[in-house]
Image (cartoon, rainbow, N blue to C red; front, top):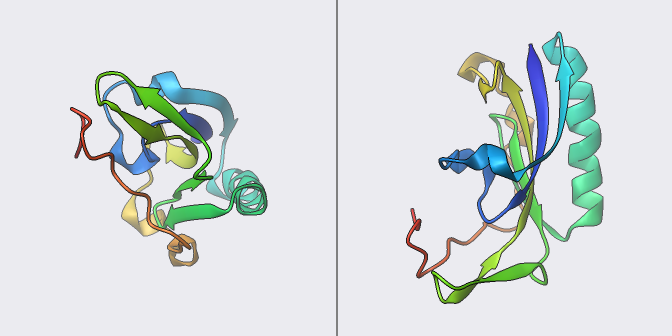
Length: 121
């Protein structure tokens, strides 16, 4: 079973930070990779049209953002970028390397890590 997952939050999807599931806004499930990939591609294209910046990985993890979407973090004492993320997972795990797709390894801006956050990687 494959899942296409949409998220909105402080971190890009490839970090899989503990509790990442709390940022999920939508889940679509598919029996085959080809079915899941069709929906992922549609949403990936939509993300590029809607937000000015994106970073995407061949492992079918992508994030989109606008520098205007930030939230204040009391703990960090700084504004944190908010990311609209898209993931294609297999059984709720990052897809195996043999199913990765190189054409998705693209970006027009690299997401920046917060400087003072206690979760800074």
